Image (tube, rainbow, N blue to C red; front, side, top):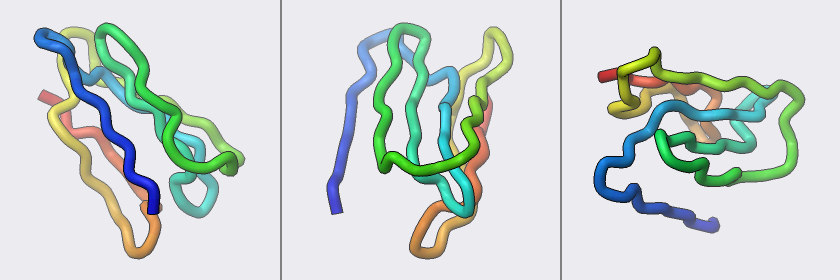
Length: 78
């Protein structure tokens, strides 16, 4: 399994994610107030969706469902 990571700069925070999925999340991109990180994952997925925090709020974490693969993901907003 390949592992990827990135560091946020001082004052930088997550604002949302973009995912490509079908039965499971295949590809994810993280969006911050300064940059985009990714995409991470595969090349599949039929549907593309962007989840964003409301203006003036930040992404504090994620929750969802997974077994062997992630099949549901939600933003936790602060």
